[in-house]
Length: 405
Image (cartoon, rainbow, N blue to C red; front, top):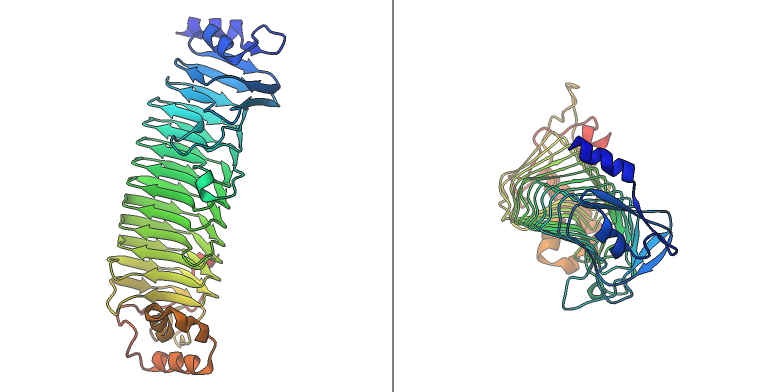
C-alpha cells in the first residue's frame, strides 16, 4: 500500500488544460489510477455529465469552472473516497421532474466535498444513501425568483455519519435538508435568505447541530419526526413572517437546546408535539413570541434561560401544558429578592392573559398597546386566575442568567 501511494506521488496529478496534456476532464479521469488526482486548470469546462466510478481526487485551480450548460447535472459520484476541491459549479438549469444537482453522490462512502463554489444550481449537493461523507467550506448561492424555481443547497437522503460544516448557503428552497439521515454533525454553517427553511430535517435521529447561524429564512428552521437531537450554540436570527419561527419542533422526542440565541424572530421557539424537551442557557430577545408551547408538548423543562424585549415571553394554546420553568431570568419579572440569594422570592407567571386572548382571537393583537390590556395583565399578575397554573417559574433569577452572557 505504501509503495502504491509513493508511485502516485511520483506520478503527480493529471492536468486538464486547453492545450493538453488532457483536454477534457473526462479523459483525465479515465486515465487516472485509483486514488489518483486530476487537476483542472482555469477556464470554463463544459461537457456531458461527468461520472466518477472509482476513487479519484478532482481539484481545481483558481478560476476552474464546471458549467452544466443549463441542461444537466455536472458530476455524479458512485465510488468511495472521491474528493472534489477548489472548483466552481454553475448553471445546471431548472428541472421539475428530477432532483437535478451540480454534484450528485449516489450510494458512495467517504466522499469529501470542500472549498467549492456553487452558483445558480438547482440542487447544489445531493447525497443519497451515503456513508461517512464530509461537506465543508463550500459557498452555495442561488438566484431564483420563486421557491419552486430552486431545490435545496445541501440535500441528504438516507445517509449516515454525515458531516456538514463551515458552509455558506443562501437563495435556495431549504439551505440544508436532511431526511432519513442518522448520526449527522452539522456545525458552524451560515444559512440565510432561503425561501423556506435555513435547516429542515425529518426522520433524522441521533444528530447534533452546533454553532450554526440561521438568518432571514422564509420559515426559519424545522425539526420534524426525529429523536435524540442536540442543538447547541446556534443563532436563529430575524426569521420573520406570518408563519415564521426561529425553530419549530414538531413530533420529536429527546431534544436538547443549550446556549442558543433566538433574536428578532416572529416566534423564537414553537413546540408542537415535542416530548422530553430540555432547554437551558438559551437567549430569547426581541421576538414577537419567545416560546410557544402547544398542548401536545409534554415533558418540557426550561432552566437558566434569558428572556428580554419579547412581546410575549411564553404563549400556550391551552390552560393545561406539561412544561416546567425553573431559574430563568425575565425582564418582565416584578418580584423582589429580600434574602439576596439571586432568586426571586415570589413566582413569575410568564404567560400574559393577553397572550391567551391572542391565541384564541389573533385579530386581538392590534390591541396590544391599549391601556386596558395593560390593566388586565397587571391584574392577572397580582391574582393569577386564568393563565395556566403549571406554567410558572417558582425560582426566577434576579441576577441575569448564564443565557444572557
